[in-house]
Image (tube, rainbow, N blue to C red):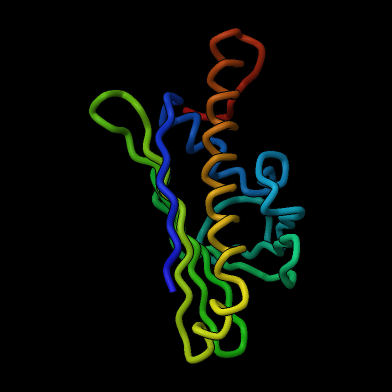
Amino acid sequence: MDYEQTISTTASIDHCWAALEDVTTYPQWTASMSLVEPLDGPALRPGNRFRIRQPGLPTTVWRVSEVVPGTSFAWEAHAPGVHTIGHHRVDRLPDGTTRIRIGIRQTGPLAWLVALFIAAKTRRYVRLEAAGLKAAAEAAAVAADDGTASTGGR
């Protein structure tokens, strides 16, 4: 099962990536996560694991499987009969805006059963995460323009 949300923002790709790579702050800007706890350190790098608590779902450990700095990352979680990959990508568009794409792919012999019970919630959470990332990046851009905050970006 595949779920994806694409949204555009006026925030720079650097502001988007800064918010995206700081995974422990996700609960501050998306209602789809209440806890992101680093198990191997807070850095977004292949092999690092994060315990994530989402309302109405079991707490799950996600392992970072791929990072393209400044552009994208993916992480994976395993449950009996289901393999889940979460992908996150930001792209600079020719008009100067940034496209945010966030998605989930669930495969395995029980993926259909999981989808039967939580497809609506999964779609909602993917939408919340994309909208939250947009809002966090735009807030960081405004703060940077005002000189009131550092974004941690490039």
